[in-house]
Length: 310
Ligand SMILES: Cc1cc2nc3c(=O)[nH]c(=O)nc-3n(C[C@H](O)[C@H](O)[C@H](O)COP(=O)(O)O)c2cc1C
Image 1 (tube, helix red, strand yellow):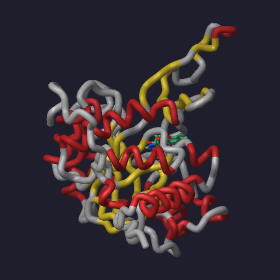
Image 2 (cartoon, rainbow, N blue to C red; image 1 turned 90 degrees about the horizontal axis):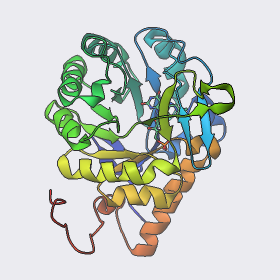
Image 3 (cartoon, protein in one colour; image 1 turned 90 degrees about the vertical axis):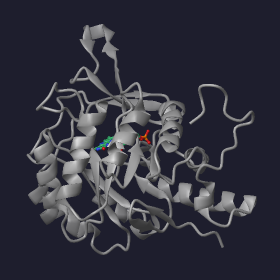
Image 4 (tube, rainbow, N blue to C red; image 1 turned 180 degrees about the vertical axis):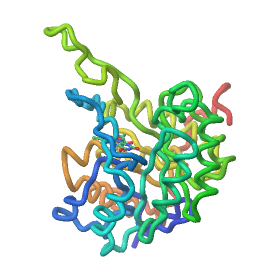
């Protein structure tokens, strides 16, 4: 028997596999047993109702997709009344993702959504900071830290910070949110990109730019997860291009304690179950008794070279 349990930022999970925010919805319970996954992560909720981005919202590539969805949200009251009840019957911790345009609003929505049934609040800090320069909070270590400090002061639930990859030094942002009290970091959201519909002389996305996700992003986000894991002591959750158990194992071995499966949930609805079973089979094959022993198990062939040392 392999011990698949992990402890992530204040919560015990049956196994280290969960969905990325926005990539599962209530209907998933019709095709798989949500008791089997490590956590349920819900779509980001914002303080006000939002329509999201104008269409087109998505461009597909062979190995990924470029998306500008823009967080359509029905707001926190709808979430509490209509979304949360769907998940009450499952014995799986629920992670509620939130986002807001100001630090105050992050605090208020965190307090409001610390409702019965919510185990963790995940901060989606990839949204614009409307009190400052409009750049995403997550692009600035100090702005990210302010958000996390306010959220921690507004809830007794663990707070996970979901980082944006659209930075030069992601480890600096991870350290800032750790110092601000984050219980874990998720690495990372979509990478900014764009595409042009040349026939029509138009941007392919209604929003012009969007977030690139899916398998093609894995080497880039994996590198970031490795850098983040070496920079912080809190658990790191890898999120970027995980489609198979092998992909998830890469993230665990570079230092992540858990993983989120995103785009692959749309391609293969029960992908998370295959990832869980595949990790367990790998542990059995390699004689690994506890999945948490895989965290950081990668051994660089030549040690750490100059400039790579922690
Ligand atoms: C359709 C779609 C919607 C998403 N919505 C959200 C969201 O609401 N909040 C969030 O933090 N991340 C959101 N994400 C990002 C995912 O949670 C995940 O971090 C990202 O897609 C990278 O993982 P992947 O390469 O496995 O897809 C969304 C991704 C997709 C594809």
